Length: 266
Image (cartoon, rainbow, N blue to C red; front, top):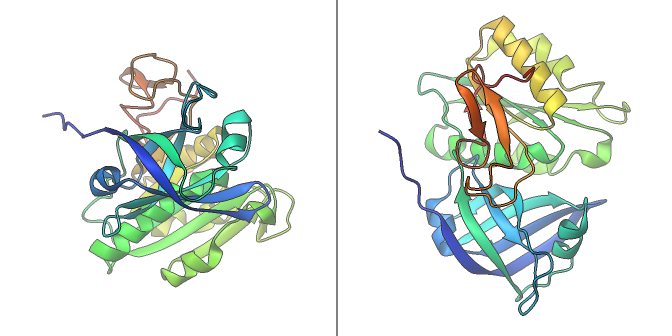
């Protein structure tokens, strides 16, 4: 039976916004309904238009980084890459955003897995942190390791927070400024056979490489896909991806799919 997940459209107050590094921001919103319903791997549609304006018209999909049900807050990490995120970075605490969420399917880690690998690239890291926090809270006996890649060391965020969770972190950068020089699949390849489950989120080339490695090693897992979205609720069909069972919508059928389900060569 298909699970019906609640989605709320709310006016959420900005409770914190700070710069983490060049172009990266940490945002916290007061959204009790979303905080109560959200699961690791889901996202929200944030519309950075101030009250009384229609610019920008479309919301931006951003993965949920942390969930605080006790305070009714949800946190996000975003990178300034265009007009929408540029405007989002100018909001001040006390201002409000129109938010739709939580949207999509979250991660489901196998109940028998005792060693889990998380593989993140760039802004694919935040939903993995959310998953790691949930595992620490509900299944503290599970060993979790993060394989985290970026273009430079400036793209590797919140490393002390990962260490505070007790997660072993393996780093990689394209320019060699931190950790392994090259793709994050370098250190992953060396240790992949020791894991019983893998969850990955990041740019398409990284996911393609991770999928190939995991399938060859026989390690099950899930991939969280990134896609351009307009509506975020499956109506516009603007975020279609190819799978072994046909075309699916990343926003509502995903963004999390079984590792073997996605077909990147279509």
